[in-house]
Image (cartoon, rainbow, N blue to C red; front, side):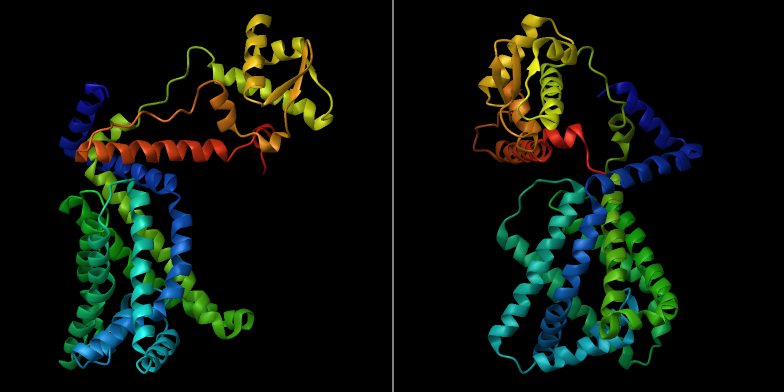
Length: 412
């Protein structure tokens, strides 16, 4: 990492007139990290998971509040109504009715509700770590403890406080006015402790301010926009409120996960310019490039006539190599059972191109070999082992997911 590039980043930070320019760099890095982690896909999956786990979570919280504090959970549902996007009055009342009926259920069902809520936290934790990019481990006891605090005890405490505030006669408008500050604090704590990496307080609360403000704006926007969707029940019928809720929660999770990427960009802001160096082009073709070029030529002929073979002169032209080197490459491909020699000077694929991945092509020439992992028992070695294995897993997954047919004729 060149020292000159890092120095440029530090100078940019210390120059007031360039604060706006550097903010654009931070936001660009945040958007890139969010996109690279497939944040939109994660947000969509979390939206449907939230719909399935919302009732068990509400039941677990209200059972605990009524059992431990004698509260009916009014404050908890007012929090949902005031701050959760897409939580219409009808939807909240339906969920409240279901949770009231859940009070009479057996202890086994209550435990299942609690387990479902903890499992939802694990899903959220995985999505947050995917956006942050960490592979750091955390003991199962710490994960369960943090899940209970975030998913159960947090809403219980917030619901009790809200109930006490409502008893004083404070209007809900004042609670919403200060909701941005409360939401910033809540999200800041989540961004600080949920990721398995060490997150600094400053970046955590910057991301918390973004997420808290965005959530309230989203809540306001959906509250105003639901009127325009009043005819949606003609399409979805009685589940129209659930559809609106999923749409709103999908946007909400997108904002929350983008907050993770923003916090990451702020924490590593001094390295951003160094990370954005342009990629370097290879000075010459790699042996793996030659292998893919040869295999793609065999693929083209296979797709026309799978029994036809490719003569040596066509392979030489495809790879741009002398005949001896082309023969040597084809010999390795035959040894890897990716190609077969039909005659002395002709070859064809050993199996359909849909069944040959780029990972197999790379392995034929000694590529895609995982980096050797440290063998020590100390914490540093263990952390590096997890990191190297994750990198190898990502590379193998990408190469195994693309076949010669996909590369030759990508699907649109």
